[in-house]
Amino acid sequence: MPNWLEVMVRTIFAVVVLFFLIKLLGKRQVSQLSFFEYITGITIGNLAAYISLDTDNTWHLGFLALFVWVAFSLGIEFLQIKSKKARDFIDFKSTVLIKDGKILEDNMRKEKLTTDELLEGLRKKDVFTVADVEFAIMESDGAINVLLTRENQPLTPKHLGIKVAPEKETQAVIMDGQIMDVPLDDLNLTRGWLNLQLEKLGLTVENVFLGQVDSYGELTVDLYADKVQVTQPQEKPQLYALLKKCEADLELFSLSTGNPEAKQLYEDCSVKLQRLIKELKPFIQN
Image 1 (cartoon, rainbow, N blue to C red):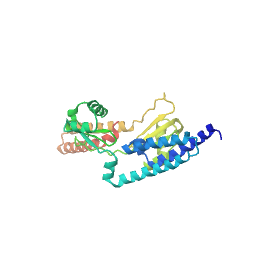
Image 2 (image 1 turned 30 degrees about the vertical axis):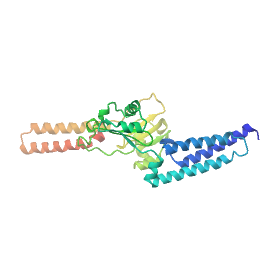
Image 3 (image 1 turned 180 degrees about the horizontal axis):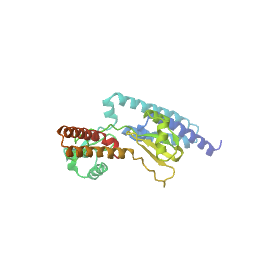
Image 4 (image 1 turned 90 degrees about the vertical axis):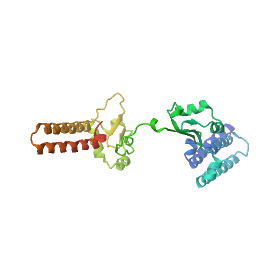
């Protein structure tokens, strides 16, 4: 076999083997590299290159080295899962960089981190003032995570004492012009419901590149024809406007009647309707 053809065949074979071995090592190898995983990635890449390009008769030993290294890596990962001490020894420990708005210079020197690098890490978290930081920590993978002081944290409904409806994962129910039955089943919806929603929008499934249903049961679509504007249904805004009109009418009736019992009845109904509107507002107001 010519050398160029042998190199091609071995390279393709090495890529296939490497693909399945990396799948075996798991997602962390491609998403969050620890110190040891960084070394593993470099070594496995070098071994794969050796298998592809070495033209002597011992190239097959590269596969043996590759399997041994992957097996050793799996053993290290298993040990890290089972032992906190092993994790701390193999990987770097997390280090506190800022506490109570004060930079810990000794810890920065320990991590060989400059002030510019610290400020850059804070800016990546949308933080521009060190005094706004309650707590900043460098994780074992080198990422800097930040906790702002209470007064600088974004305002949430919980801070205001407001309960909001639970948010569920948005599901793709149409993809590439095809209905996805499994997500529909997860949402307890049917093809009939989906076709009805599309009919309200004046569309067919074949027109839709991507269709998603959010936690409130609202269907949003992206069409193949990018210049076509989709008219969104107005049932929810109309319902909200109708409820507000009923509330205003009850208050008007309460003010205009001279009967004390009727006046009290209108006021009670108005209060109950206000509470109902407040509870339904996240669902029906767009």
